[in-house]
Length: 450
Image (cartoon, rainbow, N blue to C red; front, side):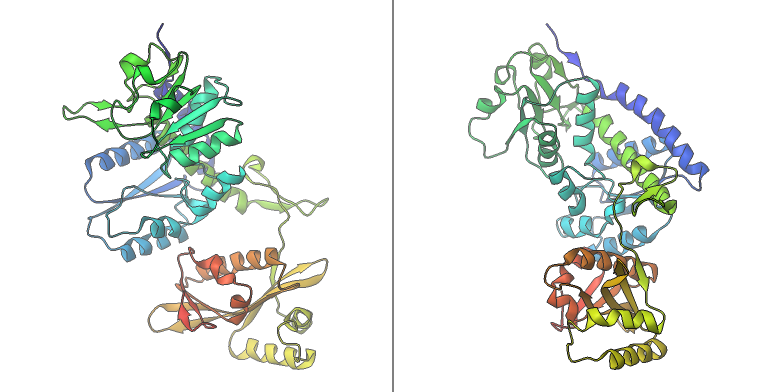
């Protein structure tokens, strides 16, 4: 008996046909989805991957831009480019081709990518979403594997799944995704003793170790489902996986070939995530508030926007609105009277272009923060953010985090490169929200860079 093939090439073609239709619809509403790919160095395998991704973009109607850098490029140069791409209205997805040179901190680079454009699914926001089952952009390779299993109607719930390889790119996210589907998951890695002890128990075996022929026929049981993620170039130029395909296929019920199995699905899921990012962009541009609830929904793409209660941020522009902020501000400065507070804020608004952003709930101001634009010699424009204060200071972090997100987007809109955070941020430890925002952060409370 020989295993049935999990054919990634055929499935990818079917998916890309539907992706083209979605891409065309987006283009008819403004512009085509856009993907930016950053490639550092001259690694031959990376060049092939990037070429395949660009070809897939063309097939699916996605505009792609490739940015090439020598391996001597500085981390600062890469961060500057990512910041530009984050702010670009032409780009929906950003991909940094890995690996990066040793002198470049991969975590810093990935952390600079906006979570809304992280189509590779590596940003902490999306990785955290995997843990709770709510990620927007799943990592492309695990996403492709999951779709292969679903399309073949291979049941995952209640099965023993063994993953060989504990990388952040494949092994760990794959485990989290399958846990959400009800599988019992074991992860093996380089320090696992007696690998075959685990692989023989697997109903579904996923191998992503980067070692040719690692899994042999005596290491698997009959009727196992084998997913070979490995792509290894041999001295003769041929491509092989991590599984001894010719022998294992006689024991397996399903198996992926290499090439032609997981590889095409990885690229296709990248395009899927890019188009989803573009659809989310369109959704955000077409929001409407329903008359019968406080929830936000999308006119054209209701399936691609999570419905949630969203507090509205307003700018206090009148004397009465400033007075409404007083009850929140006096938590920080109890001795401040309403009259002196109002006079002080109105004076600042006239002379320093000072503004107060605030959130209202049930007609009452529950969070506010003052801000204004500064011009700095070293970094140009900076957004100075005064005391951020919420009602129930020690407990109500939800209002604070929403206001922080709004201020960050305002800083991007105003082309600021730097944030100055005052003492109110230190009190609620809010500066931590900005650590991976891509801004240069300075806390005036601590008088040091964060």
